[in-house]
Length: 62
Length: 234
Image (cartoon, rainbow over all chains, first blue to last red):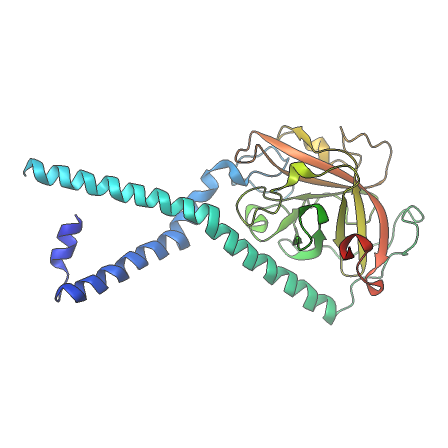
């Protein structure tokens, strides 16, 4: 998988290295910005109210 | 398709999954805190510039909190998700300051503490109930179990400093026990109407099977013009 990506990147080793780094950063950014905020309410650590609802539920009277 | 290719692809997938999990832990333990600190600071700044722009509602009589049963007859309602006060708890650290925002929605609690909309306002007769994260999003209530009777919980709504005193050690209950935020909270030992404060967070620290509750009653008020209350200046 990673070998396949590496082989299909253009340029010499240095250019490929830079492009790889940019790709990795883009993936991390997408994860932190979109994927993790979506996944996080599925875990129970955010339940701090006594309204009896589960994670993702709204507060006392929304 | 050789065995070598299958093994290699499987290994790469395992490494990818491991990296994802590590990144998620970093996000959860570290990045949410960075975001919450940033958001809370922004909310406090917004609040202070708002207080500087427009003097908030008429201040209640500074002396004797027991004197008048109700202050202004029809106060402006708080706007959902917006800050209206700051909270200080010296037990959690001298620089522990968080904004209190209206409602307890998930998005609101990412930016600070959340006020149960159906409960009283700070200083009013009834129960001013506030929820906060114990872990992640800045860990505002990380030291919750360290609260002890007599500890100060100070709230500033722009006109008045309200100093509440914790009544007893934190109480453990179940998430459906909504009576703990009643005007006279059940289990608190308080009897009859009064000016109470309730804090709620999750219990155990990294779980959600229970809730931890702390109750306090209004001890003193002080107009903001008179400076910070002694609890915060020591």
